[in-house]
Amino acid sequence: MIAVSFKIIVSSQLSVSTFGGIFLNNNMKRAGKNKRVLLVIESARAYGRGIIEGVSRYVQERGRWTIHYEEQGILTTIPAWLKEWRGDGIICRTGISPLGLHLRKLNVPIVELLGDGQRFVSEVQSDAAIAGSMAADHFIGRGLRNFAYYSYGNTWWGQARGDAFASALSQRGFECLMLLSRSGDKAEAFPEWCTFYEKPLLRWLLKLPKPVGIWCAADTIAQRVHAAAMKSGLVIPDEIALLGIDNDEHLCNVLTPTLSSIDPNSVVVGYNAAKLLDTKMTGGSKEKLLPGNVPIRITPQCLVMRQSTDVIAANDPRMIAIARYIREHALNGLLVADVARAFDLSKRTLERRYKKLFGKTVDQEITLLCIEHAKFLLRTTLMPIGDVGEQTGFDRSYFIKAFHRIVGVSPNVYRNSNRVGVLWKENKISET
Image (cartoon, rainbow, N blue to C red; front, side, top):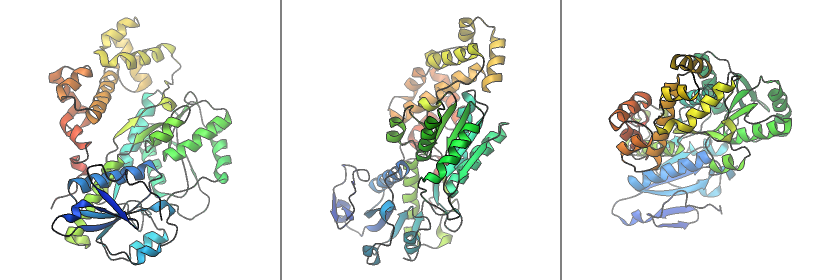
């Protein structure tokens, strides 16, 4: 029997009992038949755990489901119990494994969240293009002008993220150096590290122009670059600014220096996956009944900066000091005139030199820093909108306009979208 904690799936609001790996909630006591849903998701990675949480939230809000949960990572063969399982729908991240191929023969609606990028599409996924743009803007904003991307294993999602990063940099006038290590031609859904990858990675890191910003296909992959950089005597973040994706807090915070990472919004991915499965189970499994916007692409939540990208790459000590001064005082109602006065520069000279180095004006930098903190407060507190504006240095009447102009939605919509139950317009599944 599989030893799995169900706390990550069901909150204390639901009473849960288990029978032979089958998890039943008390909603079964209500009139009507519960849908029987098989959840085959790995929980060893932060992305998978977030998906499970999102499914759980949907079930608590709107679903009358009996969940049968199995840890995907250890199912290397088709388990015996599956031959007897009878249900109404499946949510899985199985790719083209024997288990995944078997699940597709069960003739029930299925939502695949991994696939192989060709035969089986990932029907709900974090938007790689937006993540690539976030990574590019973060590095450029640190003053970096050399960029690289690393992944290993033959994964479609690793390639997609690299292509998105390279495209975002190209649009901004920069090139991306890429290393996609392979150990063979076989596609890998969850690539494992092997010694074959280490020597090419060490050589590549030493040859890269410095300082360089490196984005990796996942936090677990960034961990390998982190170790290789230390082994090579390269300094993070001064020589290598390192960024991952998944925002696995346990992994990111245990590394020294700690690892910056993009939060891919996997909870919302899971919520949408459950909603899509509900649509399929209600309307049947025929393709014509599915929403026309599959695959559904979810906007990543945020970029969490930690020590591994806390660098300002510039040959101008004065501009470095100015950039740090802005980051320290942006939330205190800082004005361009205040910065110019503090460093004995004219506003025009300050803005010209700063934009040349960092790609944005001082005024834009201050505004973006304030907006990022406002987004953090909206996601993590119930502070009134007006108070959020004041806390981040905005005039109350101007805050909503500025937020909408930069983020694309109002503060209230942004807050609701990150509570999962109410989603961004582009993340919604059609109700028709």
